[in-house]
Structure formats: C-alpha cells, structure tokens
Image (tube, rainbow, N blue to C red; front, top):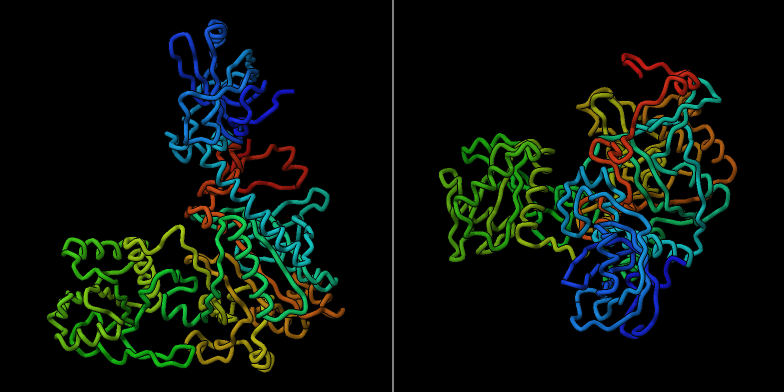
Length: 612
C-alpha cells in the first residue's frame, strides 16, 4: 500500500496514528539537525518532520522539488500551527521514507504565484496542472458538470451519446475533416454540434435528451474560443418556448446553488433582441449596471411600443461630425463629471484604438452645480446641452460620452466603451451574477456579398408561429442589397432564445422546425437547391415524414460557464489540455505532419509542400 491517507486529510484527531503518505515534494527547509518537507498531492499539503536520526539518510539521498516520496511516520500536533492550510495543526514525524521517483529541476515554480509564462506553462501543462490555482479550476469544472447532470437526471433527461465522425455540411464555421482510409477520397467531419442527431432522437421518441459533449469548429481563435470545446447539449419534445426557458433557468439556478452556494431567487429578466441592440449596443448585454445607450440622431420606437424620448436634438448645429453621421450614440457615466482633461484625452485615445475604430470622442460634463461643459461648446449652447443631458438620463455629477459615425461600427464601439467604463468604475463585479434571456432574434441576416439570406442561428430554427405563413408564402430571392430591408423575410422573428450571464452568452437555442415543407422552405431561403438540400440533409427531411414531434432545445457553453463562475475571462483556464491562440497544442506539438505511408494509404497528396 503506497498510502493510508492523502496529504489533505489528517487533522488533530489523528494525533498518534501511524500513517503512510505519498506525494510530491513542494519545499525543503533545513534547520540544523532537522529538516521540514512539505509533501503535496491533489488533496492538499502536509508538513513532514525528519528528525536527527533520519537527517543523515536524508543528506545522502536529498529530495528536491517535485521528487515523488513515500513516507511512514506518526501524526503529531504542531507547536507552530499554520492556520492557512487545513492540515496546519499537525505534522508527520517521519520514521522511514523512500524516493519513488526523482525529478529534474522544473522549468517554472509549481505554486500559485508561478514564474512561468503562458507558453512555457502550456508546453509543460502536466506540471502546470499540479498548481493549486489550476486544480481549483478543474475542481470547479467537475462540480458544474456534476450539478448539471444531477439536475437533468432529476428532470428525466437521458444522457445519449452521438457520433463524432459525421457528414460534412458546411454552414457557418468551417468543419474539421477526417479522411477515410476505407472509403478512398471521402471524408468525415467532426461535429460543430450534435444538432441533427438530437432532433433525430426527438423523432425516435426520446423526449428528454442531454449530453456533455465535445464540439469542433475550425475558426480563428480568441481568448474565449478553442477549436474543441464542450457543450451541455439538451433537447425536449412537446414543448413551447416558455417550457424551455423555465426548465433551463432552473438548471442554471441549481448549478449556482450547488457550485457557488448562491440562491438565485429573482426572476430572470427578459428582453427582445431589438431592445438589447438599442439599449446596450449588443445582443448579450451586461445588465449588472445601467448606462443605457441613447440615440441622439433621431427618434425611434422600442419593441415594447414606447417612443424613445430623443427627438432631433443635435442636427443643424453646424458640427459636421454629428450632422453628417449616420448615427450619434451617447451614454451617461455616473459620478464622473470631475474627469480631468488628461482623463478625457485618455478615453479619446482608447476609442481610437484599432479594436474600437472610432475617430474621436465628444464629452459633456454635467457638473454638480447644474452647469454643463462640453468639448463642443462652440456648436452647442447651454440649452441644447441640457436637452442632450435630459435625453441621456444624466444627473448632476455625470459625464456624457458621445460617439458618431456609421451605424454598425458606432454601436459596437459605444457598447465596448460602456463595458470599459463599467469596469473602470467597479460595476462589473466578479462575485455578482446577473442572468438575462434575449428573445425574438431576426430569423435571417442578409449576406450582401452573396446576395442571399443566411440563418442568424442555424437552418433548423423555426420562425415565430405568427411568421410561418410569411415564410411559406413569399419568395426569398432579392434583386439587390438596397431592397433587402423591404423584403418580408427581413421582419421574420426566430423562435429562438439566448441566455446571457454578466455580458456573456452562455447558452442558445430555439424551437425547431419539424415539418418537411417548412424545412425545405428554409433551405431554399438559404440558397440551397432541392438537390443540395437532399444531398446534405435528406436523412433529416425523410425523418420528418415519420411523425416528428414539436421539439426544441438549447446548448450551453460549458467551458465559458465554468470560466465566469471561476472569475476568469478565458475558457482556457478551465480546460485540462487547451490549445493556444493559434490552435496548437504546444505540449504535443500538434497539429503535425504525418509520414508518407499514412498519406499513401489515404490517397492524399500534399499540394505545394515538401513532405518529409
């Protein structure tokens, strides 16, 4: 037996017990004729005391950092207790020890405050995983996984596996493809999601399905993207949108309680896609704080029917930046009217960065004494500035920040500026969680370069029931880009929903199409010929002719959910063996070349390269 207890298990109650421990050497500290060693395993750290009798033997076989030791000894109560670790009241008076394996000097220190950079730690990820900070992330990931499974089991969902080697049906992100040796010249694809399989399971009568499943997308990477990632994938039959929302609000609240001991008792707020875009500039708003956007250029109607109180506030003042802009958007930042010139100049440089892409920033200071001062006083008098402040919902002490330009870029830029100001003011607290449902997305987007519609979610999303007839009765073809806003398809709403947590989309889904006629109409709208639709999705269209039930579902980004709950901006911190931002596994040095024999077996010739 290598051990009787773990390194995180022993307490004062074990005093006097003879134990055997095994683990890795964290530190070695010599004090004259005695030596202290901190021994570490997955469960914690225990201090070992090597007395005078063992010190000579220890000197002949000195353990270094990350040596693997087995020790036998007696649990004793420490005189100098360490309140910072659970085992800090005891130590092991070692009677014998054995070096199970030696270690070369690690390339970085294996502790929370490591001196290893990202690339180095990823190259030696098996060492990085020994660090307590990384271990806590994986423990949280396991806790979220376990909580989700427990909830779904209690709700009568079945965990059903679906294939990884499937048919390539490019639509959206690129597929990873796998050549088939037994079917020369043909390829499998790795699934971007189990979408069609879970719909087929609904046709098969398995009315509550889930998987915690790997998905694959060959796309350019960012801090929150990986080429392989994990979803909590769910589907239900005989449901409407409200059933899905209630079921999975329940799941996330269950996870909050099980993992973070948070009782999320409030009703999850809901808003339409239009409200999110007008009020926050993006479709995944962080609603932990206010600072809603205001369009100063023209009045508009919110999707709830209320008129926004803007009116023509800024046109005709002779300020070309505003007069000639497609849109002018503002936010009121609370309590920042005392910003200095240096601070406003720094914000101006911030919005000029390539990632934001604006040419400048206009500000209006609403001073605490009620006066107003702006960077455009030359063009706007006090009365006009007061009207702008009132429209922006600003109060004395606030700073109004205004961006102008093309609609899409300006909306994105001020959305990022709002988030940045929220961060600077400490309004985006890691330990505060705010859920939101975003509903009623457009079903289609118009791809100008291809002169055709594309699905905003995916081709299997159903229109809202009231819009089905619009889709069935109209031809999707468009003459040119100028006319797409006039087309009936531009107003069709998807029966879709996204769950947002702290400004991050953590889940998205929809009620699905389940009738062949409507699915064929959707494929036609996306520019597929009947022959192409049959080639790519004939199996699904055929299944719809055998009594497909109404169904819908949702998929949660498991890695992202874990990252948010763990207070990290990157999902990579919560994946055991992640890829870097170039999609490489620097530990395995993958992807890599394969030898000529393998290529020959696959009938693959590499174009334009010299292959070793």
